[in-house]
Image 1: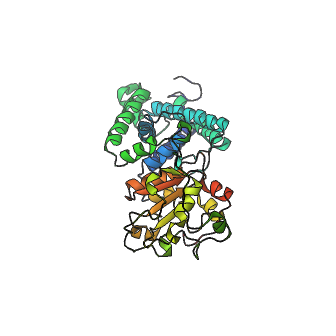
Image 2 (image 1 turned 60 degrees about the vertical axis):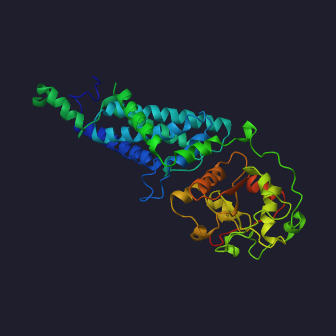
Amino acid sequence: MTSACCSTNSTSAGARAGLLAARWLMAGLFLFSGAAKLGWLDSITTAGIDPYTFAGSVKGFRLLHNDLIPFVTFFVPWLEVVSGAALLLGLWARGAARVIAALLILFCLAMLTVIIRGLDVECTCFGKFLGGAVNWWSILRNVVLLAIIWSVARYGPGMLAVENAFNRAASPLDRNG
Amino acid sequence: MQFTLLAAIAAGAAGLHLRTHSQRGMIEAYLQRPTAAEGGASPAVDPLPHSSVPKSDVGDEPPGENGGAGNANDGGVGEPPAEQTAPGPFSLASLGEMITVEQALNIYNLPFSDEPDPPTVIFIDAREREHFLKAHVPGAYHITPQSFVNSTLPDDMEFWPKDSIIVVYCSGGDCDSSHLVRTRLIHERLFERVFIMEAGLPGWIEAQLPTDAGDAGN
């Protein structure tokens, strides 16, 4: 990656701090989102739902065959948790950012079909947090999140990333430079 | 490469979690229910020959002081389960999971029949609270799928007889909340006779049946 803006060697401290903020923001959001859907937050916050309720929401989109819904009900939140953890640590951050970007694009498309078909589906995107019916604001919110996560996918994890330590260890020149 | 590895890790965790999760059976039971589009909803049931209170009477004056359909608030709590659970010619056995407004009305009226041991009848409104406050079936409890997660179930639910006749409704049509609540009541709370009023509250109102507004201790 040799972008003029943010290549590894030329990235300013401000830009790297910005990437860190974007990475941690998205990490927190998606760790919360995944944990809420898996029912891990029940005793902490009323924003949590559980897999059963999430399955009802997935079914409401009417995009998947019933046989697929149980797996998707667990796969999506686990993908959010795993990617969120990777972003938080700064390990495989670009890959995690791409995963989340792909999820957001899929969510946007699914929401678009819901609006076009005129279905009344409750968005359990972040558990009960930012809930309510799927509408254009839900899509706009995802587009904003997509723009944020795209910066990490494009320019890397920024500062305080575990993978930076690995990269320095692998490249002694980088350590001196 | 990282993308694929992360997806594989998540898929593995999801597969393992799904196999061991206690709610798996509940999710599958919920998903297996027939939908209206598949022609499975509202199984054909002959019009009920018996109603202890004519529809027109109920429309003018709801039975029971609180309008309750003999629900647990009205004295059903703690009473021994009725031996005869389907009094009169009204046969619950003929009902499927989905019932019509007329069938729901017959259930509503069961506690007010002349039978010696009328069953406990409970109506549950599974819609969002703001909608419940505007209008609901008289005496209905407000229980949403979220109530089971947040432990906001009615305090007296543990005293409801397990053979209570429970009717759950939401907004009718595509609304899924009643199905989610029904499956939980059966699988988690072990109630056996839980029906869904398919037309929801709009159907109840369309039939010019009485409603209550506000929060009556729910």
